[in-house]
Image (cartoon, rainbow, N blue to C red):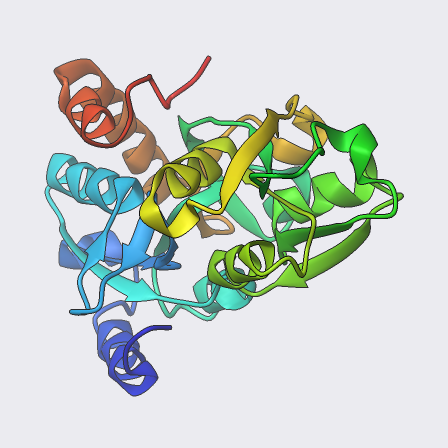
Length: 257
């Protein structure tokens, strides 16, 4: 987290007092997000949250006519925090996978993009086959780490708590390549911060690992809340609000097929 943990802990405790039953009964939703995954969600130095996930969450809350509040949570603990009722839903680019569906319920997807490899600009790595004996970086507890374990078994996999750490190690030559969402890596290498590096290749989606896209996670059994989100996703897709947010960040339809 980039700002006071105690602040958000206090906010979470205060929020819990409002949610003896359904969050919807109080016309308020507490949304958990990571805040360290640009351009989807990122915590700015002034404490504000920005990104595609954040704008989509606000649009969905407006459509549902509820107040939206955000709590940032480290990725490794985000599902346990949802289960502990620190927030009511996760909107944080979480891929819908069978493993996660054992712990949480998901809405329909709200976007779908595939994985990619990024490397240093002078690297000769062009694909998975070139990773034998190389060090590959990935964020821990992600579908991308699982993808690397399955499809790059001859690489040394190095895991990181956030994307910031693997970016620093790729820039510093401590890893040979990193794997993540193609949009996340593409936006990074186009920025001044990512001038060191390039996209080696986009990777084919493995549906068993990557799932059908990113969805909103809710606690097990909270199907009414999931369906309210689903109806809101359909509504903003139909009324143009989704496209407005999409076009703010991307020059293609991130919703996917």
